[in-house]
Each structure stands twice: as structure tokens, then as C-alpha cells.
Length: 238
Image (cartoon, rainbow, N blue to C red; front, side):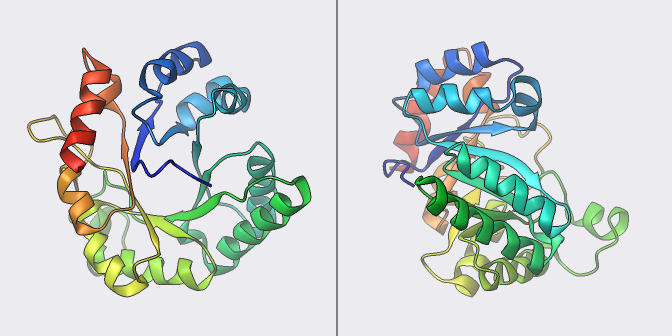
């Protein structure tokens, strides 16, 4: 899997294939990959992956798989067959579920003769702050401690990396080493509205701390000039 040494993943959080392809056409030069999340996937289905692949785009399918190991393994096989570059599961599903996903992806890649996607684990969503984490979800301790615990568990299960907020990058890098992939959402250029994200950071800060890839959606796609917005992020992280 290659993102052409470009750490910027642009989230196509739109309703239709036509909207997604229009954005991909405009932003393809500036994106290392495009993220297809639940909104677009549930609206357009896997066909949107095929359309993006026709444009030689790398695709991160962000469905946060979380089910019994056999079910997650089956989904990982299907997504691998579609040629995705990255897929993710929930770390809270446990070591057995994560191991089933990555083993299924690797087996399917070999069988189908396609590149194996990166399989990464979602830790704690960037919309969750410490109060919600402890008092609503009911998990004791700090978010950072839990994220590091789940990152180490994902690594032990054979996964390539995790999805985590920029606030946990340093701790994950220390616990899991320099080659462990850290995909960072919750990235907002200075002065931009954080929207529903609680644990955010600028693109330049996240890269300097050790993020491998940055996921950026609305600051680019909802901009008056998406190309200019994407270009500005790339300039900042250089």
C-alpha cells in the first residue's frame, strides 16, 4: 500500500458518488488518500471504492468494524477484495477480533493477488473528552492511558497501527515504536472551527509529534476553495 509519501487523507463525507468523485477530481493531486466513511459508504455502497480506484486513488474505508471475530473477519475479506488501502476496526472489540481481521485481510490479499491493506484500530473518538469518557461511557482512568493500552494490544494482535487523537501521539509512539502507524483525525488548521471534535491540534503540530497520516474533512471539503485549503495544509506540514 502506498500513499505516495503524502500524509494527507481527505475525508469524503458526502452523500453521493457524484459528489465524492467531483471532490476527488479537484483534490486528487493534493491527497495521499481519500477516506470513505459511514455516510458515503452507506449511501453509495462499495461502488464508490471502485470509482475512486479507477482514478488510481488510495482509499481508506472508515467503517470501524466491531462485531464477533468471524463477522469482522468476513468484512475485512470483502474490503480487501475491493482493493482498499486502509481499513479499521474498534480496539474495544478485543485482541481476538483484531487478530481475526488482520489475518483475514492478509489471507484474502494473497488469495486475490492484491496488496494487503493497512489494518488499524480505532481507540477513543476525538469527539469524546475526559468527562464523557469517565462519567458517560464509564471507563475509569485517563483517555491517554486507555489509548496506549489499546494501541499496545493492537500491536500485539498484529495490526499495523491505530487511529487516535493528536493528543496521544507522543505516548503511542513511545509505547509502540517508530514504525507503528498513527492515523490522526481531529486535525484543524489554526483558527478553524473545531465543530464536534474535542481533542484537536493543527496539522503541523500533529506531524511534528509523530503522526503518520492526518485525516482532514470539513476544513477542506466545506471550504470555499477546497484546493487552496488542501494546499495550505500541505505547506504547513512541510
